[in-house]
Structures are given as structure tokens and as C-alpha cells.
Image 1 (tube, one colour):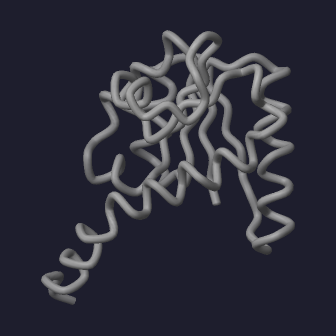
Image 2 (cartoon, one colour):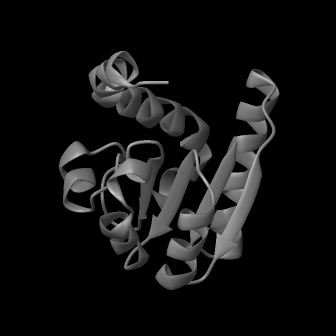
Image 3 (cartoon, rainbow, N blue to C red):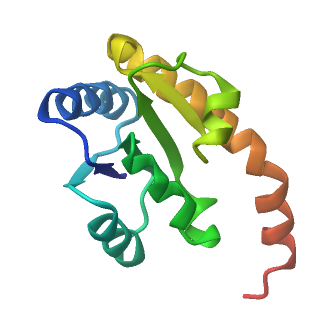
Length: 137
């Protein structure tokens, strides 16, 4: 599982990596974390690889708008916010993210990521079902 982190401080990145260690331990999946500083670097990585999660913090969350839709459906985009409420769907919508986590709630990040990923899966379940049915192999 690959994770992209865009424009996020070392301290917050450490919290993200810690949350993924817990997920990796429970699922048996390995996690590769790629950290970039700006949107240009992020898009270059997104075009080269498939990411399970993309994290960004204001104002870098604008990157979510530029992810090609075929890649966007495949990854969970999480905006980190210093003011908004964690898991607030309206803030997530405004930021073009699947979910929002307030940086004050990083101690609950693993729990929040699981919830956001579940919502993402539910949102696209019908799309992927139809895609699998009509895809010609």
C-alpha cells in the first residue's frame, strides 16, 4: 500500500506513519510512504504510481482537484486541517477530499482513516461493480 503525503510537517508525518504501522500490523500489508513538498511533485508521483491514500494540509489540499478522476476514485484523499472538525463531511466536500482530520485529533488518526476509507468504499462500490461487469478482458 502506497501513501502520498503533500506539504506536511515532519511531526504530522510521524503521526501518519504511526497510524499506518497499526494498520499494517492488523492487515499484514506493507506501507510505502512518499513525502513531497508541493503540488507539482505530488502530481508527478500520482501519474507514476497508484496510491491508496493521499494526505495534504492547507493550502496543499488543492491537489485533490487535479488528480485525474480514474486515479481519484482509487485513492482515499484526506485533508488535514487546523481549524475544521474531524470527519466533517461538508468540510471534506469543500476541500474535494474523502475526509477531514483536525491536526489536534492525530491521536485518533488510525480510527478516522478507517472510517474515511469505509465511506470512500461505500461511495464507489456501485461504480466499481458496474465497471467490473462491463470491462472486457
